[in-house]
Amino acid sequence: MAESDTLGDADRRNFLIKVTSVVGGAGAVAAAVPFVASMNPSSDVLAKATTEVDLSGIPENGVHTVAWQGKPVFIFHRTPDEIKAMEASDGGFDPEPDDKRVKRPQWLVVVGICTHLGCVPNKEGPGWTCHCHGSQYDDSGRVVRGPAPRNLAVPPYHFIADDKIIIGEA
Amino acid sequence: MPNRIINWIDRRFPFTSFIKHDLTGYPTPRNLSYWWNFGFLAGFVLVLQVVTGIFLAMHYKADVTLSFDSIQHIMRDVNYGWLLRFMHATGASAFFLVIYIHMARTLYYGSYRAPRELMWWTGQGLLLLLMATAFMGYLLPWGQMSFWGATVITNLFRATPFIGDQVVIWLRGDYGVGDATLTRFFSLHYLFPFLIIGVVVIHLIALHTVKSSNPSGIDLAAKDNIPFHPYFTIKDFFGLGIFLIVYCLFVFYMPNSLIEPANNIPANPLQTPTHIVPEWYFLPFYAILRSVPNLVGGVVAMGLSVMMFAFMPFLDRSRIPGGASNRPMVKLGFYLFLLNMLVLGYVGATPPTNRTILIGQIATLCYFGSFLLIPYISKAEERWLIKRGLAPEVQALIESEARQIEQAKHPHSRRAGDIA
Image (cartoon, rainbow over the protein chains, first blue to last red):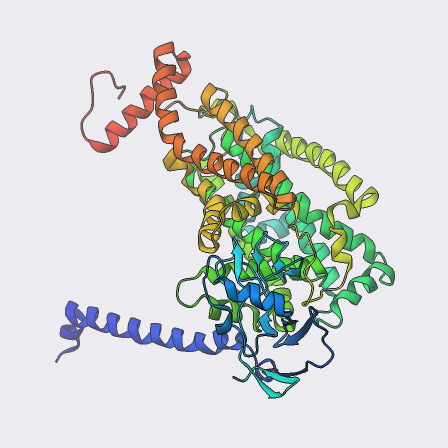
């Protein structure tokens, strides 16, 4: 084909423009991947995955706050009365029976981060109150007043002894 | 000799013509009031923030174990460090004050209307960039308010459909706000002002294409324009003097009045302060967030509350030129809107109780309602004003605009009354 024919072929030009645009665009997206990925948690952050907690020092009706993955986890030693009250109800906005939220009824283990916007609720009377936007949770960590949409999360944990748990592994 | 150098440059770069065309000789409406000073003041504060920020960055350390103490190092040990920090912290509030007045002037005088829509929209972009910059800068001292403010705001991205939780972790680089978050906020806090400078250049190029609006709202004939220099350089510098008096009053006599006391406690990820409040300039939007009893709804409402301003050129359907001075309903609406902003600000600053939540919800409805009613109010007001009789120059302007629209539709037809 003579040079003038290839230059004058509009379809050929349009096809080449489309192909180079697609290849160039794909290249730009691929080049963005490492930059975006670099903002995800780094290996040393991922390594803080589990926390071991000794429960023997927590008195009845006492709450201990431990850090797991940099987040506060509430460990609440419930009294028989509190257990009875919690088993009697299913909570509020996000109904869930109490026995689904505990491994052993006297120990409530929940991530102490308000499911609304991430503040740490305070233990006040029965349950917790989040002072940032007014959400309330009961003694099972279930939301009873908004704006929080969900119950306090139960982290994966298991008992390795009668008074020891590991948070971070189910 | 200086002339020869300038001539040498002018043959290679449009130096003299740029100065003449865009600075000294730039045609400016002669009737601009002091409300037109605030664009210049915003530019001044931008330079102030960049300069003080660069010098603060020479002494600041972005590391969770060091940053809180490095602020104390700046305050106590660095020569004039206290001055740099107070200028920068006060400058942030000054920036928002100046920008809010600049926006209020635009709304009052209807300066967002054709042909200045792009001015308004680039301005909206600048507001978002300013908010992002201020928010990221607020984390850097690593105090309790810094930490929990950043926690709450990054959590807003949980409202992203499907991948909300991953987006929040990606933004923070950690499961909670941590060292990775602090260092990236510092990096971006340093970057964003330069993006702002870029958008300001676009804002100014648009301004120099459409020229300044003026209090009458009527485009002035060439004879009513005067050169920017010396008339408005002197007016801007006088305004700058007044601004600096107020600014220095805060910097030197009450620098801590704009800093939350709780931010003097180092960040503690395991303990939220009982009452967290954002800086004053975010309070109305924060009140709107809190007024919606649903996470996604609150986030959408807060985002919309900032973005509503961008719709103004579409919402205002009146053909009456100018702003509130020609339009009594706009004037009334403007002051009611400001009042509503103050109510929202008050609600945002107080802890959530049943009463403040109710007030906040009513004020939020008024906020969005006032935007949504503008199309109807502006049309009804136009009919009423035309029935009542317009000032002759306003009448003439509406007619000439109608002719222009007609001409644009039929560029070749010419009507009997037109002058060739």
